[in-house]
Amino acid sequence: MTRLELLQKVKDRRKQAGITLENLAEVSHLGYKTLSRFFAGHDVKLSTVEKVTQVLGLDFAGNEMIDIKTLKEKRAEEKAKYIVSLVQDTSALEMQGLESNVIKDLIEEIKKEFLTGQYKKNLWAN
Image (cartoon, rainbow, N blue to C red; front, side):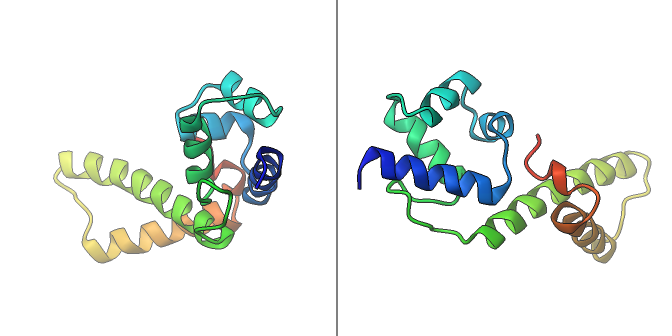
């Protein structure tokens, strides 16, 4: 596979995932300029390619390791758990911690909002 073929696979995958360049920079912990150079076809470090492909659920050669639906669900669940943990930490400080079944329900509700609801556009935002 050529570098240009890999680049096209990564571009296609980024579009499928619905992730902006700014959000990809945040999630991958790479600089925006570095990603801009990569997507413009310029030479970048191999570690940059590895981080980008990993975030997008691809292997180093651009082959799909995680299907797009699973990738989005995984991201939504991570974000939902983070949000619920904030609520749980605050509640616990006030001696009003939530029970585990309530926590699971909250996670599922928030996850659904990130996948199909009003927060869909924030799935990849940090």
